[in-house]
Image (cartoon, rainbow, N blue to C red):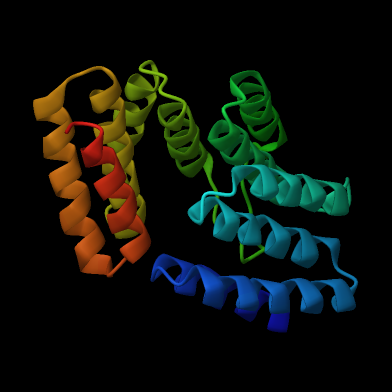
Length: 218
């Protein structure tokens, strides 16, 4: 229970923009996961902590951590968590500029994804086909792949009505993809929607990301 709660709190703190506080909480989640003897709890906490490093622009260290998380997980965790870890590794690989490795990790994430996603064994992992498609588009947009736009727009058309944070992130991804294609007006429109939604959720992390995307248009 401590590993689960500390990891969740760490993610919420990271979303508020406090990377130092998030790191401390994820350290606590890792310790609890390790002492519990549950590879799923430990590897999930490690995977989440990698995002603390991505947010302070230490992508190589983030990649090392998420790869260590996958090693800790091995074949001892449910497929849903395995897919989550591969997708997290893809994001870290994209941040290091490794396009080939990133695309392979995305392929492995899709391969590991259960036909009927069920998180009853890992309730702290929220992932389904829509979320994985959105994640894939996010990662490819981060690589500057203009072809990511079609996948992102498809995911946007299937956005769950109550998923405000995910919708904000998706609009930001679309804005980034349009920016890469040089379509300024469309990019700014989606960035505006993303900013409005991020303000509703109070996500400092999202607002910072949106600011980085709009700077691409300066």
